[in-house]
Image (cartoon, rainbow, N blue to C red; front, side, top):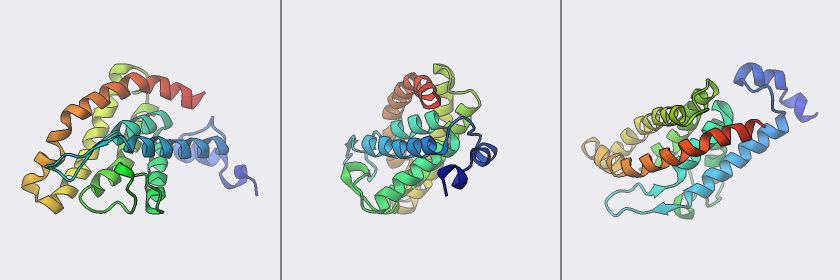
Amino acid sequence: MTLDQWWPRSLAGRWFGVRSLNPARQLALIVAGSLVVALSAQLSIRLPFTPVPVTGQTLGVLLVGGALGAWMGGFSILLYLAESAAGLPFLANGAHGMPFGPTGGYLIGFILMAAVVGWLNERGWGRSFAWSLASMVVAEFVLYAVAVPWLGFYVGMNHALSLGFVPFITGDALKLFLAGIALPTAWRLSRS
């Protein structure tokens, strides 16, 4: 059985809106996306007052989701989490394991974040700097809608915003700016 028989283009196109990429290229992009996020996770700074580190993961997730689209971006993050669960040191600071604990909401939220920014970009939001920023702001809110309540389960809801959202506003703004600059080019490269 060939890859085209297992993953026919027409089926992928009908379900996921991916018509122009052959299955081998789709799988290669998904794997590459997971590795981009794994590499970006290694850019990590521990903050002494919160269990959540500042990492480059959100930048990586935004670029992967935005460049690959909703389904391939989402699957890249699922693969990234599976690689970590299998024991590869792909989480922040070379950690690995299942996405549980105080930071698990961020890891699970990355799947939705990538899918949302990818979905918006598939509809034209990622072709310019301003619209790229808008799509990523929406995706950031989706991430925090999952991550902050999850963190609140561990630290209490009254501390969740001050420990899981407020300390990251400045860094996220910088990452959004950088990703907004890079995303139109990344989108064109992933489609060429």
